[in-house]
Length: 91
Image (cartoon, one colour):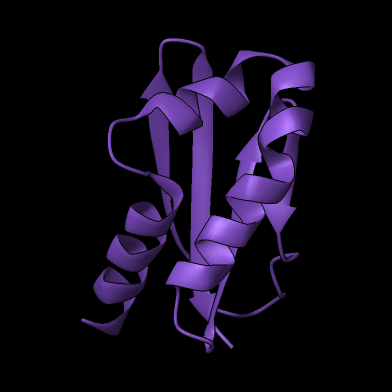
């Protein structure tokens, strides 16, 4: 159950109302760089302190490096501009 809560929390944090931000960060390297700080801030602000996260696109990533040996919940979201992978784990 704890893993499912982690997955849902990370997914909600990375996806603002509508899916425009996820689509935007997958669109291009320039778009990712422009939105990087806002995305990182939004995810960090919404998630509980003990929940670590990583949001990845082909253009870059925000969040923390995944720790070896720690169970990680992950989901991949397909947008019109590409895929975004969202990972979450408890520290």
